[in-house]
Length: 328
Ligand code: G3H
Ligand code: ZN
Image (tube, rainbow, N blue to C red; front, top):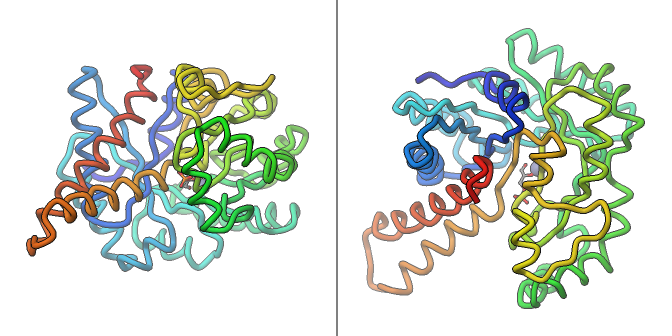
């Protein structure tokens, strides 16, 4: 079917206290993997699974804006899964204009690097531009940092070798205070939402972009305080690193401090309705490709490597979709 407006996916999800996965694609195989994951899970659970496919400005540049968006549109037209196409983390008005020209059905404008009032002003401008075309806008309040803001690539590689509780402790020691300070302030929510006119709110609640081992607890207490100030769907960013469910915290030996929780808690009690996942899917593709190549280093047929990479992305995507459907 044709692409659907993201509002049509998120407003019912909000009412039903479930989340829609928003997965970042970088190539054809990833687009297929997301759609197949949604189709297969939908059969498994016996009800439709909606899907948001996201292209960042970087991914759009990599694929070419028309080819990137065109690929998602065609893939959507060939499935019964309802698919919205979101521009992820646009930081410039020109990127938003391109997305509107290409038929994206949602936009995240990320003004979080700007001073507060400039973020409000520019987001408002983007909202007016998008609403003229009926396209909803996600806006960012507070800041969701990247793991690279705190650790060098070599340190990140070392972190990954540590047992999960030690990795969490090391991240807390170096980044914890800063991540906490960057969280959205509940008292800013009503002003920010009413001044910008945004449709969905990516409010920082303690997650970090680019951790890929689902080990990091988030501040569900802050999320609840934010949710109490707005009726908009809330969005989780940096979700590859967030602990998926309370049972994972137990299994991984990670103690949750007071007010902390998992992705599942964020959905069930914090009003999170859209969950953005990128890093772990990119890594899944790379790992699938490399593993297939290592198994047969004389392979010359790209499809024999791209296929397993695509399967690995599909399986990882299904884990998230199952969690959002309350099955994990
Ligand atoms: O906007 C994209 C997401 O916030 C993805 O974050 O790469 O940490 O999963 P992640
Ligand atoms: Zn993000």
